[in-house]
Amino acid sequence: MRIFSLCLTLLLAITVWGQPNFNSAKLDSLFSILNEKQKAMGSFAYTQQGQMVYQNNSGFICKDKNGTTPATPASLYRIGSITKMFTAVMIFQLIDEQKLKLHTSLKEFFPQIPNAGNITIDYMLNHQSGIFNFTNKQEYLSYLETAQTKEQMLDRMVLLAPAFKPGEKSEYSNSNYVLLGYIIEILDKQPYAQCLKTRITEPLQLKNTGVFVPANCAKHIAQSYKMGQESWVPTTQTHVSIPGGAGAILSTPADLCLFITQLFETRVLSGYSFGKMQEITRGYGRGLFKSAYATDSAFGHNGGIDGFASSLAYFPETKTALAYTSNAMVYGLGELMQGSHAIINNQEFKVPTFELVEVPLEILEQYTGLYKSDKIPIDITVKIVDGYLIAQGTNQPELPMAAESNEHFTYSPAGLSLTFTKNEDTNLFEMTLKQSGATILFTKTP
Image 1 (tube, rainbow, N blue to C red):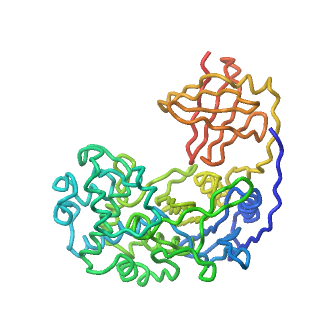
Image 2: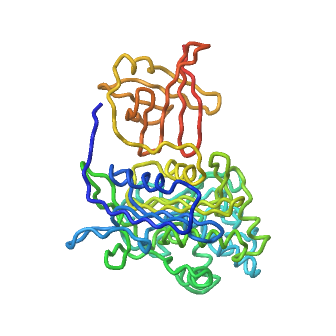
């Protein structure tokens, strides 16, 4: 393995308000190294009790004939599935207005959808409808950049065989929220974009949130990128007519923090409706997820579309909100959010250097073998290929692990890290896997 370095022209805009009681310089360094090593670029915001504490904007949002346009607090990013939070809120507003009920049947709006008579608004909100996720179909890739009518999208969903019987289990499906967006339009008698403006962005003063329009440097609307052979290259732009209520919104981290803070202050919904949003069934809330952060827990949502990645988290106990929006990312989104939270709360976190080291072959050979855990039903095989350590989970692809020390290895695209230690009592190697805030111990089989 080789040590690498990359020289980039960087712009890093940082703002700190007041006298924060955390190591803001360390947080600066996290975003700086991610940008410098071409692991991520984007915008971050941290608020407490609705007041901005810290912002960071790194990298560029687009390139044109005039060069690159740097990220600023006003830069607009597609937020992907965080859109589902906004859609869920509008559905609950309609419920509060008695125009809809959780047990209302999908048959009242779209009887042509398979199992519509047994699918409720409730099932759609928490992904228990069984409606197949249309973005999982191979044909999706053939039309994602082309404008689609509502009729075309509905015709595709009619042809999708159900994934399971309504209420039988939970399985994430963008189809649910596209249909919920259509229902909002039917009941409000106006386009989704106008519903969003009337119901959420204007009342909550979200001045930098709206339905996506194509990337535009002059208007601070970001283009997304993926990693090419040596640098970021532009990705696709999914047409806004396709994701609708499942992923059509663009915003800024500051607006996202403001949105979720006011949501938790019950300025948006009745106490009953907001309570229903937070109920977790089989890991799913109604437009919300609950996740663990060290000793804290947060409600929020992640998003991803084209090359964009975003995350929004609210911590009720501290009334703290964190939001990150990125237009280019190979570092793990979960690792970034977990690391940011740890730094803000003065918890242990080592800022990655991404400097690769060459591990002696005799050390790598000690780690090879089959690893098992009593926590999850997935085994991991560790082997060596061309001098690199390779990890492969059961029925999963091989992952080339980058060595940051003789014991610690990472796979940045998935935010995955493996640390090897020897158990002196059993004389067996153990492997600690970390990903998206989860820590799982595996033991090498004899």
